[in-house]
Amino acid sequence: MPQQEQRTGTLYAIAAYVMWGIAPLYFAAVKSIPADEIVMHRVIWSFGLVLALVLLQKQWGQVRTLLRRPKIIGLLFLSASVIACNWLVFIWAVTNDHVIDASLGYFINPLLNVALGVMLLSERPGKLSLVAVALAAIGVLYQLVQFGSVPYVSLFLASSFGIYGLIRKQIKVQATTGLLIETALLLPFALLYWSLIDTASGDMSSNPLNINLLLVLSGVVTTLPLLAFSAAAVRIPFYLLGMLQYIGPSLMLVMALTIFGEQFNPEQTVTFGCIWLALILMSAEALTKARARRKAKRSSAA
Image (cartoon, rainbow, N blue to C red; front, side, top):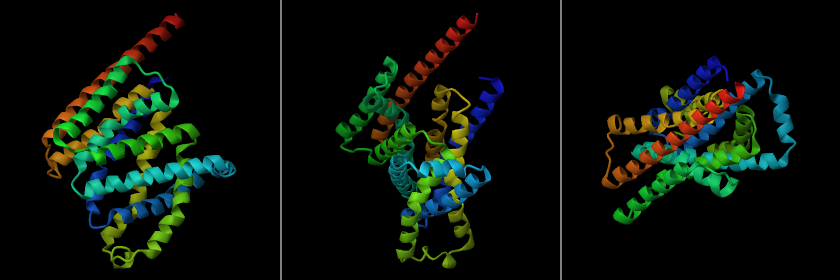
């Protein structure tokens, strides 16, 4: 892989994860709007933005091809429904002072992906990755047994995002065209919901201009990180993409403690400790495998 391509891909990945990491700032700014309405706006304005991108990139032929494959459309409807639920819970978490829980969810996600790969895709990760998954489970079980609480928000965000990734991995469609069909499938429900809601914020003509602008920008907040992530995924190794993923939840955690004034409670301290140790183990294994592959490639070239 050319060095310039890898540098470009790394910058795209950092941009994607930084945008995802600082997303709580955006949702805190529209805290006065109910979470379900924000999800509605995300669907509507994302559809408009992605449609424009597809037309500009002349990808409409790919969209027509996908529309002739009902099985793919069914899977995209499933993935769209899962990610919409993920958005709803994430927005609720941010607007109800649970940013630490949201951060934990996205720290757990890569570990859950390993477990899903083993159970559903017959993948064979290394021993350290399996130990990492076990450590994460111990952290969650400790919170359950010692304090009688389950990190429902964290587990839901991790599992829903993991299932979304699993579905998209199976259908292997381009990010832009796939996102267009996903939002198009959700669009009728979003528009119907908008016509039925009876809230002050539901009538944009009565909202302050800054709130309306922020709601329209929800399409940008949804789409840009995904496009940057897709551009990174084809340019850099998977292990590097996975390691950079921790930028997002790390930023969320820092903001939760400094900007939003949240605090660790005892059970979260132990759970986070187990998760961080697990991530260190998994990253160490990924780096070791990457070095081994590079060494093998150099040997074969010689």
